[in-house]
Length: 468
Image 1: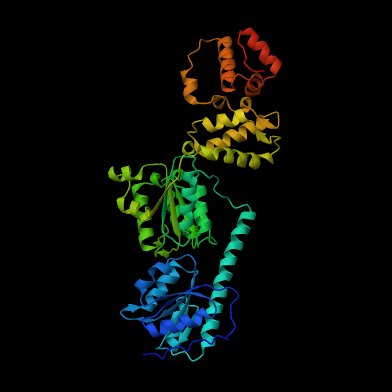
Image 2: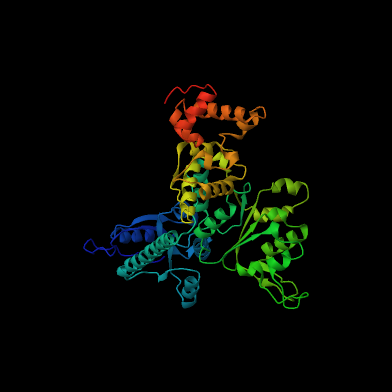
């Protein structure tokens, strides 16, 4: 039985400016209580656990700062728990405590990520307090450094996901939950929803953020060169081959984004599966494999489950990629985000010589109520096109491409008009007045014409405006 730690005296001054949450894991109850009294003298919040199982809930607490961990926990291994902690919660500092101290044991713990190593029994209470204080200082320094790095990335123009709709809030929470997880991710979404942008956000929030982000569109690579592009090739491997490391090795330490993964052939699927299973690749013409350390984010607009059932996509590869699945909502399911996206694109293209500063209400209504089969990519294209041709500081309905001037596609299809300009003009006047509540001034603005022109046309077609 290890000798109990002597409690700190009430006159001891606090060693830390701000206390933290400290978890103590040891199978000796007397030692736990003694450590609790010492840590309380610095106002730390302490949680005691006699086993790894008892500590589970606290180990998952995002506020956890420091763990004091005994290497011998009955039948459990404190060393295994140390390795798991540094793998799943690398930001938490771990101080190892044991009654069987040795230089080899100390070196092994430090190599596995322990902050420090204390041998029992403890004769120096001040040493315990000081070690915890230093671990807490480093924990907060690392946290602050990450916050500053995030701020710098944002100031440098790092791309962010735009939107506050329920679907986008769920997407952002999912990305945040992956910060300390390096599992492969499968993104599913329609074309134009921003799958690469989401992949970049996952990479930027991960522990691999300092590594490279390498995107590749699998659907655009010809079958004859895709293997060489992904895995590289040796000089002389084929006619004209000068040697290339390949995209897998270019993404070493970072993230490889495989867009349109559903387009790759069965032969390439086999090689991708081996690369994921063995964490190694064999360049074309090479005699030995090369190890790779990266994360895969794959994306597709296809239904991979259906392709698996039809035998067009390997089931084993599907499950390797499908560790985490994220569905990206189409724009029609997040219409609340369209005004924010419009403002973002206005700011983006305003510097390209455009004088446009905003959009009027009628134009925004048309944008919000459109169907957007091409999703965010199509919306961006519409805004860029309208800004290039708009004569004034605000986008009007007349500045939009022709197909966006109607509120809904279904309305345009439903119109059954004779082949007559007068008939189309009368219909447009009636629609404008209806949408503007009979307000002639608003209807003129909606149609992109002056009020006097509107009144002349209304008189021509014998249409009455209820409000002037």
